[in-house]
Length: 446
Image (cartoon, rainbow, N blue to C red; front, side, top):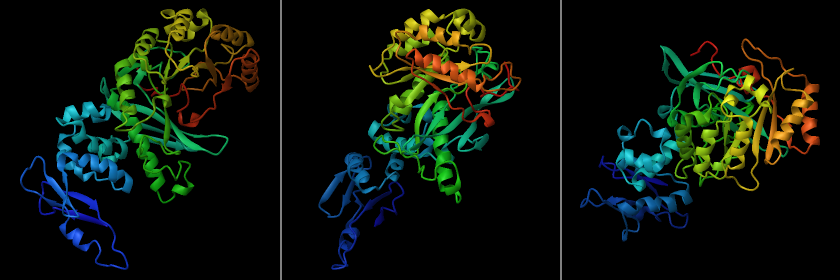
């Protein structure tokens, strides 16, 4: 039974749980509920909340801890208590990109005062606090959605993100979210549509985290829709609320920085977004469930290594294991060649069991021969790696061809025979222009 208290006092509002009446004693709890939630008027800053029985007194500054103990236990989330101390007008506009400590400082509050509203925003954000989805397309459970992100030379810009449904051999279901860190990219990889746009804008940490919050809200909407049971997006996705840092099996389990942009070219915003995603007071995503994909920015790898984010996963796009060919298809190699990249990976802090993901885009008649596979084997020697072979995904005005299944299988077998753990990356979202290398608006160029 929920009782509202202090309704005639606009400065305060709270709800609390009282014991149900028993059949043997229907009056049980009535006297208590009549005495409950009487607020003392002596100290407006530190009100005393009296809860039945009348002699139990809880000082206002300790109510947050009572909430943690009893609110979680009873499943009663008293978010109204946070609103006592923080009105919507006091919430900073940049809140999606802030950790709890930063959010509290921006609000001019203590961590304890800001914790509940921060938790509500990060774990239960609804459409009123999220950006409008400007475009969204869905096919077979894969969803590509776009969010507004300012302008460039009078052109409206959008982030592009992809929700990927995942399953395992045991029937487990979850989602991986592919997020963008930039709009466009200045790395110039010739097999990537984003690279052909040039760099139009760096995203803020708030832009990045908003992609996660919006994706989770889309799952919630799909779960609550009348035809949710028939939708590919899991009907049991739930609200996306993470309790005690644990994610629902059908919630977003992994975040991969594999959308538009080079994450290490927007280093500060990406690291801030990771800190926010992992904040235990908010989204509480484990660091081990985040993957940063890079074309091999050695300077960024060294800065990342200095942060000692042990558990963070790294994916490195190689796509050619000799400098001559890689210079042609990945211009970054001219300044940061393969030998220097390998040294940076050998120095990178990691757990003993952690492998680097080596991303190899397989392009017909360019880098798909057994000889190219042998070069990759030699480059990987001494590195703990898992190679993901990604057949080239066609793009608008495509300049390359898709390798045949036979060439793809032969490339994989060459790696496996030489002891390299390798698999073919399953293509998801190709019909949405949401697969690897396909993100980006071809009409927008620098």
